[in-house]
Length: 153
Image 1 (cartoon, rainbow, N blue to C red):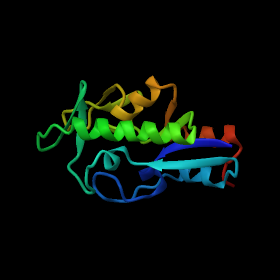
Image 2 (cartoon, rainbow, N blue to C red):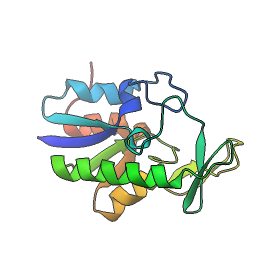
Image 3 (cartoon, one colour):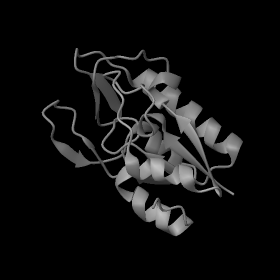
Image 4 (cartoon, rainbow, N blue to C red):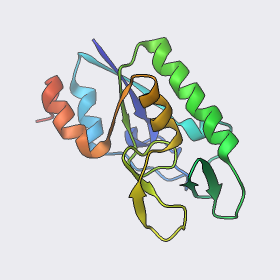
């Protein structure tokens, strides 16, 4: 049985910075696969941030919200808790929200709050990768469904 750490917002939980729902149908398709267990996490909430909360973006090794507050500590705490859960459940794969300052893998917003994307990883994605956990974004969910045999009809 494959255990996959997954961004809770992709499953429709109201944990996004805005407090809105934003389920991803491609990710929900994994729920049909009986050989997959999804472990939902929101690293930002695990780090102690409220929902809703100010949007935040990563600048180098720091994370700042739109008000100019350094929220790096909360993001690091949440990343540590997400890693702990992944290890506890034996997850070797994480399916995380693209471009997020926590969960983005390969591309994140650049810290200017202008919608500009740059190369890089979110705090949680970076920590998971450093600990041998493969990280993919929701854009890869359909391919993941096909690989795992859980494609929705």
